[in-house]
Every structure is written in C-alpha cells, then in structure tokens.
Image (cartoon, rainbow, N blue to C red; front, side, top):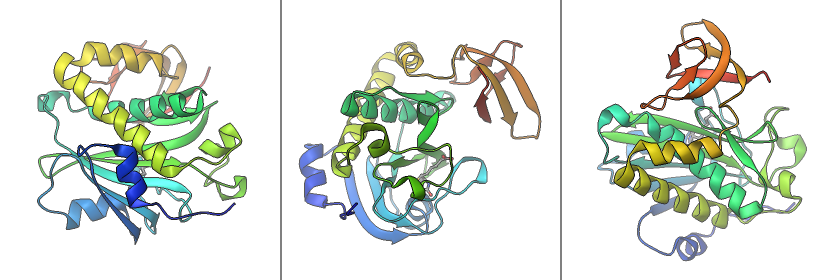
Length: 251
Ligand code: BTN
C-alpha cells in the first residue's frame, strides 16, 4: 500500500465552505495537546490535523497509536450554543457523526459503543476524546482509514479499507465526517436533544445490550443498557445513569 500525504487543496475542495478552518501538520505529540496548549485564541471550527502523533492520547489515560498517514488524526474546537449542562452530549454527537459518515461513505453499518467509540462488527475503527478547554470543548478524533492488518494497534480493531476491501481517500473521509458534525450540531442547536437522541439510537450498538461498565473509581456494573438520560448519560437497568466509563458489550 502506498501512503500519500493529505492534500490541503483537496480538503478545501471537498469541504466546500468556510465552516471549518483546517491546518495540516506532519508530526506532533498529540493534536489534542497541541491545539489546547499552542493555539490561542481559538474559534469554533478551528481544526488541527496531523499525519503522525508521537504521543496520541485516548480516553481514560490510554494511548492512541497509528503509523504515519494511515489514519485521520484531528482535534477541533467546538463552542456549543447549548447550555453547559448539556455539553455531555458533544462526545456522543461526534461519535454519531463519524458512524453516520462512515456508513454513508461505504454502505456498511458502522455503530457507536457508548459513549463514542465507532465499531464495525464489534471492532474499533475510530476513537474520540473530548476535553473542556478555552471556554468550549476540544473534540479529538482518530479514524483508522488505510491500515495493513499487521499495523492495527490491538486485535479488536479495524480500519475502513479492511471493511470495504479498498483504500479510502482520507480527504473525503474527513469532509464527510465534518459535514455530519456540523449537521448534527445544527440539529442540537435548533431542536435540542430529543431528535438527536433518536438519531443516536439508530447508530448505537450499546442500547438494548447487556453490558459491563468499568467506572472511573474502580467499580464495575453489569446490567442492560436501556437508554440515554437528558444529559447523554447511559441509563442502566439497575436504575443508575453513568456519565464516564468503559463499556464492554456482553450480549
Ligand atoms: C480513544 O479511543 O480512547 C480516544 C482516542 C482519541 C484519539 C484522537 S487522535 C486525534 C486527537 N489527538 C489525540 O491525542 N487524541 C485524539
């Protein structure tokens, strides 16, 4: 497989409007840390994308690893128009947007694992990390686009090309993803969470499943995932609602 660098002109063409301001760099520690620490002031839609991260960060203090030019690795500043009490929805909106974009681009069924991993047939293709900063949220997205099987970071991972059998153009994957993010942010802003929750449920592999949730404090809950709260928390059949945790699908 030959890996070509991202073409900024092709990105602008594919994006087609001025909503996102994209900067491409070849290497950084982490686009997330770089945008948080070195970009100021930030405006809604500022976006940094790197060909390689030498210290990519995942949720719950994990690493996110991808060889150069295989993945889409970007962080973008979002200034939600909704009340801060609702910002827990943003990680879900980003995961939903990736799942929708990949499903529409490929004709395959990509689903989210709450809150926002994106899976194909149970294997992780994309991970998302959202952090509060600069009075808004920094949404960091990693999507495995064109990987050799041997390059996958863990056994239970996959990539778009391994799902479809052909290489994907990363600029088009980026444009489709950003198009869905802006569309879903608009729905959130204009209609609130009810409509979004309906769309999220269509792309959720978690709701209705028996799950094990590892909570940040070391405790674990096994229960059925029955829905989402008004804050985007995962509602469980034991009566609890979880805002942070690592979900395993049991059945
Ligand atoms: C996870 O799967 O736990 C979340 C992974 C998030 C990875 C992305 S890649 C771009 C951005 N920069 C980072 O260091 N992390 C996010």
